[in-house]
Image 1 (cartoon, helix red, strand yellow):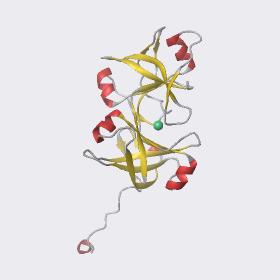
Image 2 (tube, rainbow, N blue to C red):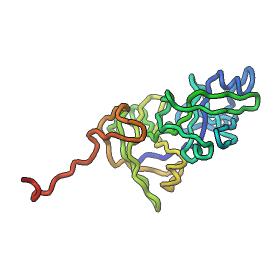
Image 3 (spheres, helix red, strand yellow):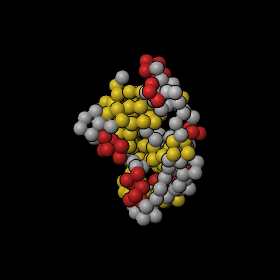
Image 4 (cartoon, rainbow, N blue to C red):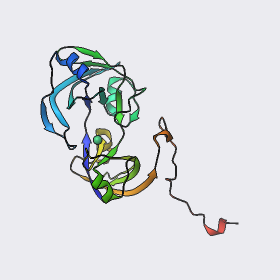
Amino acid sequence: MQIPVGVSARHIHLSQEHLTALFGAGAQLHPKKALSQPGQYASEETVDLQGPRGKIERVRVLGPVRPETQLEVSKTDLLKLGMQAPVRESGQIEGSPGLTIIGPQGQVQLEKGVIVAKRHVHFSPDEARRYGVRDGQFLTLRTSGERGLIFEHVSARVSPKYKLDFHLDTDEANAAGVQTGDEAEVIELDGLHEQEHFHGNEIVRVNSSPKIEKPTEFVR
Ligand SMILES: [Zn+2]
């Protein structure tokens, strides 16, 4: 089962309130390029980020606006900014750090919303049925090529708003030597895992490790 790869470069989703603060009263996003997920687009607008130790300029704003501002960066970006942030599913920003966002018309001191996006596959309900996958399930995918890698703990997200795509960040894609348009193969469908089983970086696996059969001579 092959799934197309979509590499997500660093980007920001803005609330209307923050869009206005950064770009001025009456500001709107101007779509520049449609993204793989229906209705989502990269806008003409960019912002700069100021972290404790470094700055990253011209970070793409994705549209449409969302209820809450969320910044998705790579671990490498965090090193440059001089900060840490958790690996999270999109939308789960409780307890994540903030930073300073700089726009052409103003700045926002973000309280929370900086995350490293957890790798995931988007499925429409039809695609999920075809692949035998449920929302929230964890998959294992393999990429091929010179730097082929196995990606564990890939969450499946199923929604009528989605379309088949395996989303990785630039660190993950570079490590695997893959780019948007390549394909990855689903090699394992794990059981349903609860988000609660994740404690920071430590992952408690539930019913997902391969059963190790003891050689007969060790069975007493
Ligand atoms: Zn995605």
